[in-house]
Image (cartoon, rainbow, N blue to C red; front, side, top):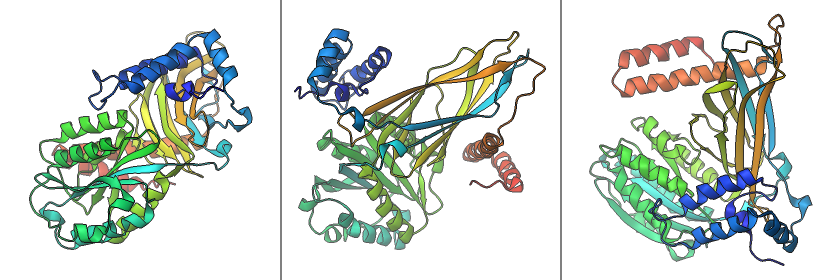
Amino acid sequence: MNDKNYYNDLNVPKDATQDIIKRSFQYLVKKYHPDSNPFIKTLEQFYKVQEAYRILSNTEERNKYDDSININDFEYPQLSLNVQYSWNAIKVSHEPQIVDVIVDMDTREVNGKTGKKRLNLALLVDISTSMSGARLDAVKRILGELLQYLDKNDVISLVVFSDRARIIIPAKRVYEVGDISAIISGLEAGGGTEMLAGLTAGVDEILKNKVEDYLHEVILLTDGHTYGDEEKCIQLASLAAQNDIGITTLGLGSEWDELFLDRLSSFGGETSQYISDGEALHAYMQKKLSNLISHEVENLAIDFLGGKAANLVYGIQLSPIVKMLDIKNINSLGHLSSGEKMKILLEYEVHPIRKPTDKVNLDTILITAKIPSCEIQARSLVKLLELPNVDENSVPTLNPQVYNYVEKAVIFRMEERANVDIKKGNIAAGTKTLQYIAKKSVRWV
């Protein structure tokens, strides 16, 4: 039996087509080469990807390899995928038409199997002047209780930052930490907020123990704004995501920069989280750590390959979190725990259709993920989005359920635009938009 797992090395499923194998290879050789990724210190993974591609891209070699491994095809669950369209057909028209698509994903076929992973966790805590008093006391109390939710072999580090960063607990196994309450008891708030220094130190601590079968996560807690280093923070967050390091951002109180923290988290498929007080922080941390170590599906991503008959106007992830998608790039959608569902809304503008055709091709989407409980973890789904074409005298039927989600998406996009206006100083425009939204009184369900 062959002890090498070329499918995992190349991050492709056992039934991957040559196009998917080539696409994954091109992405991974760039990811693992030090010339394009400064986090890479060794070429070991780079060479593993090259070897896997050499075998899997050659039909004869791939068949020999498949014969040498023992994979139980009955233990090969997939993601469940369902697609709904706003209209049941597209009619012949000399004018552009709008079609909205709902893509639902869940873990039904995984059958409750979860992959337990060790954590490599870096905690970043803002201790600038605004964190003094009850806020810092609450954070200390929560940190003091944190270890009970971790395994003794998990890795943890603690970094605090204000004008500069300090490493309070360097990366080490939980059983090596000792009394965390005593370690942090002397922390005092003071100074400004230089988030880049804290984020850099946190990522560096993660990299000291970056083992492949661990889940790597930075959790950042702040109550304010960083000044002058926002774009460098964004660049670092993007690079961290490329190296499978997630960043969770928590905003305490009411003065933190939601748009900025959303951008930091978005590369790993997350959004920022509002934390009202110490009790809310305790509840969130307990749930977050529980979810981190046990996922049915990990590293979900979606890529839009394009269609001949339509342009993608925008995309929104509607659940389990709400965020805009980057329609020009691969989007990380995060992880799915047992019972969770993911819903995405895509809006297309269909080009004028001047003569009847059989099908109208809107797009082809590529969804990739990992199922950690399986021997071959990678999954990929290629879904063609298309609708039948009808003559200009026909009347397509509207799907009211999809239309309901479109209404909610419109409100969300207006809220995003209002927040951008307010941040840029255009208070009147932002306030007017928010007042209009309030009058509409549309609730998320």
